[in-house]
Length: 260
Ligand code: CO8
Image 1: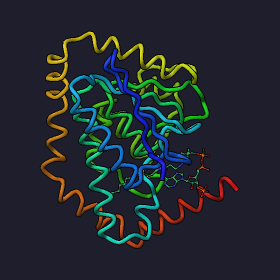
Image 2: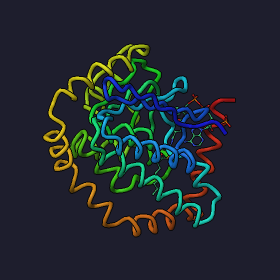
Image 3: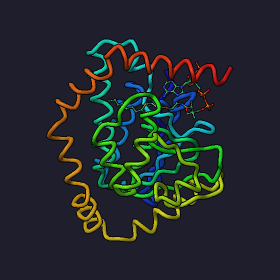
Image 4: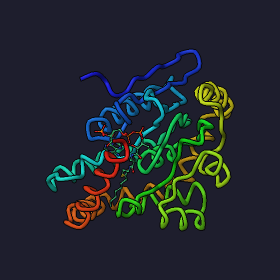
């Protein structure tokens, strides 16, 4: 199978661009997440890499979020391994020492939004057909505490409370208003804008910026690190319940019907 992640590293600027290329919608499957984590880890260890831009090679979609087929009709063991890889992705990206920018060139629901929120800065394509948000309740599921924390750290308590209960997906202009994204650009200029912005972040001494970032995020990261196993147990128990499986099945049907 072809690689699901393509990394372009520019030695002269120290910036890597990571293109997610897992057709059709960059859903976060176990294989995809494993590949993504290996790529991020490699860049993290490379001292010459100081910045990372994450974007999609798929049309219209940044990432459709967690791959629902990894949690539907699967064994508890499989669900557990899958969840560990979701945690790993979040820990790697939210805890990255690199400057990270999400170049959101398409829709970014649920896990896609989570991934974008791990970044230091978000630039989204100004196309009202796209949306972004944590829509879990619409699937009849509950966003885990660390999804909630990440959103709270991004847009604040009140907005997160409302957004999460209603499972709101925001159009780019509304996402900008609440601070879920930081900048809108015409679709074909999103990556160029990210490249421009990242050079501003890279003008700050790495050491001071990295310590600041890690101090700001430490409490949130420690909370998951010290509860990883119980979070996996909770997830597996929750997701394998008949009622939840039914909701997921119904949601997948709806996705397919909507297109037909
Ligand atoms: N997982 C698996 N398959 C998916 C997913 C997904 N998340 N999203 C889309 N697909 C499939 C579709 O079923 C469709 O399959 P097929 O070709 O067989 O019909 C194919 O991908 C293409 O999808 P669309 O035709 O819908 O493509 P569009 O370009 O029209 O739309 C969207 C793209 C906007 C991304 C749309 O597909 C969409 O809204 N997808 C669903 C997104 C979503 O709700 N994701 C939530 C996943 S749950 C999550 O991330 C967090 C869960 C936390 C669990 C916590 C429990 C404790």
